[in-house]
Length: 93
Image (cartoon, rainbow, N blue to C red; front, side, top):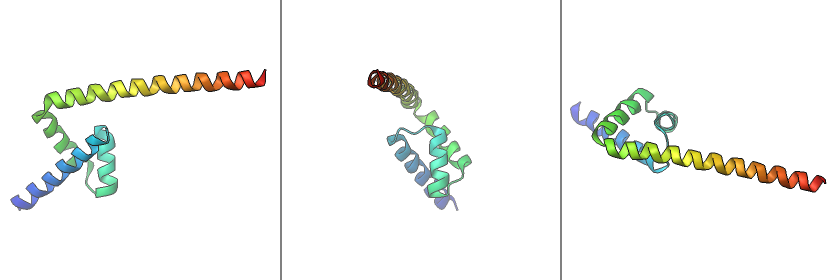
């Protein structure tokens, strides 16, 4: 049993790394693995937490970058809305 459970954990670890490549949060990863790989969220969460412990600096930087990207995306969205509203307003005048 030890070998197969180690193999299962290794597979979950690998799938989490794939989620990281796609810039997913822990919650998004848990949902994706549950939906697409039939892995219980508690398993994903546990493996994720262990990875965070083992790679503290990486996850701190990853979390910072995700927050920065979210801020950039929100700013872009606001600018697009402003521009769209301005164009619509100008077209009506």
